[in-house]
Amino acid sequence: MESITGLSFEMMRWPSGAMQPGTRVRVVQDRSWDGRWASEFDGTIDATIVPLLVRNPLAQPDEREYSVVFDTPQRDAGGHGPYRKAVIWERYLEEF
Image (tube, rainbow, N blue to C red; front, side, top):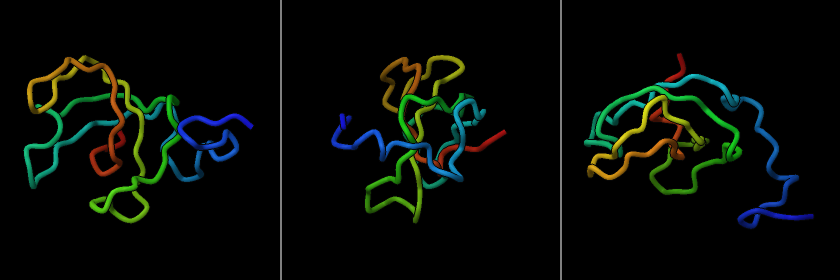
């Protein structure tokens, strides 16, 4: 069995209950800090990565991270970019 970043393809099935590729989302800023991005913007969940649980002590219980393609290129809060897509934690995504 082949693997990518240490995970077998068997482990990379799309999780039930996760937002599906093609889901339209708004990337929102965190109210408690300036956030990762310079502004809020729209994008689409894509299938580049399977949404995995965030492995970080700051993550919320069962929080996933998603690959999001942006409608228009975006700069981060530090002015770097423009970026066309990124992996974003679920708490910063609102479906519409």
